[in-house]
Picture 1 (cartoon, one colour):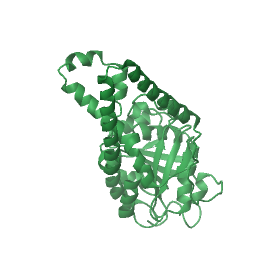
Picture 2 (tube, helix red, strand yellow; picture 1 turned 135 degrees about the horizontal axis):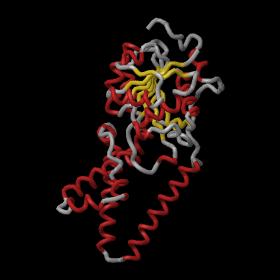
Picture 3 (cartoon, helix red, strand yellow; picture 1 turned 30 degrees about the vertical axis):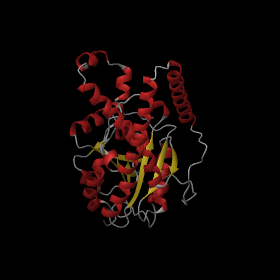
Picture 4 (cartoon, helix red, strand yellow; picture 1 turned 90 degrees about the horizontal axis):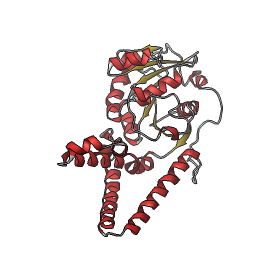
Length: 322
């Protein structure tokens, strides 16, 4: 029997999942987006065979729910779907923070609804640029990437293995992490670029030169401001964000002093070092060979395909009592 999946949110992330999964005969994917026009466009482009117009209809009796909406919407969505999930259903949040969704799931999901927090780290080929929305959806968005995974409360090992296998199906490697450790570094990896893009956009816009600057601002400005994103990444991870922001302010102060010192050689050397660090990171992301191996958790070592996890007592087949 095919696996029935509800995909909630059809932006770049959700649209890419739809493009990668909907072509498979063993997966039946129903899509939903708060904007009905986006749902229609996704279906017209062949990304989805079926769309639903309400969240309860989308998740009714499905095996797997994927939350691909902005993180700020996940708590409310979990509250809405909780009464409609069948026993044994697996729910996965897809966001760059793991801790908050796990806590929301602990609070809102009933027993025998299994939750996994996921952070899809994208393909190295799709790092440049700041494309967003359904137009930026790509079937290979996850190829050669990582999926950071953390199980929710009372998550069955088979449910975690299901999401691990899903990441592999999409061309990514599963990466099992501690939620607090993961979210601690995301203050620098995700929130800080958002803050710097925010500061740059406001500084430029408030400048008396903005009327002319906006005409000549080009690739560098567009790339530097592309990180403006979900404000929940700042408010839900405040301690980490503030720590990295303080460190960045210290670096900006040092850079200002370096520019003011009128020492071209020192300035060039410091900038060259930063460029080399970036080039090294990009090469590492492309190779995907890290010094420290990903942490592992105790999960089943079997290699059954995705569908076999929905057979037996743990995952009751469709039509089971809710």
